[in-house]
Length: 277
Image (spheres, rainbow, N blue to C red):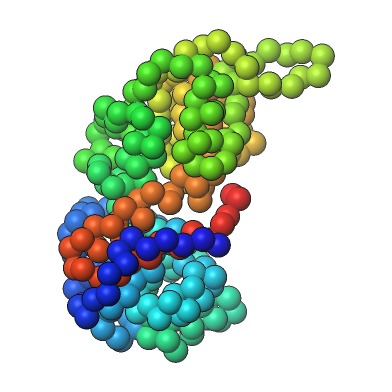
């Protein structure tokens, strides 16, 4: 686990959980999204907020980091109360929320709004880290597109792999569009195709690869991969880069913490709980 302070100066400023979530709701246009979990304030710790921890997922390790930091609020991309999950506050879920309540820590989460924001969203920050420019939406009819199309300097797959590895600190899994059956049927990922037009949607958006191909993308970047994704990439002739769900979604919540620190003068610390997925 590593952490770094976004704002280190001391401050006597406080804000209520309701005011903080209202600011974020407005900034991210949260009400415009039909999501799989509630966006905004999910657990009200009942205390004025003076210190904030941000992280990708509201796991127990992140809660423990907030307790150690004497934080009053945790802000995440992956919060609680997902559609279809069991409602009772028992087991692991009960343990997490019990810790929040016992220590007066509020939990604020933003899912799709934090993917889609055109400036600090996960897609926008990933494109920025890869020196790509977003030019449109994967689904053009969407008012707030969750998936995007970006352009980059024309490069081959190996060059893009090196760029992703440097930006995210991990090597992506690459499925080459130029697959040929050989004696060992190994997809070595080596081809001379130039990649210039790239579909991007962070996290678990691997099934958007078909839309990326439909929109004329040379490659698609997301976080996860399914068994079917390999065959889709090969058969549609589009390179796929699975860069890690966690790794591709660090940028948005860290950037949101920056905005909050600047807006309210509060100390905000991003804590990266390592996750290889």
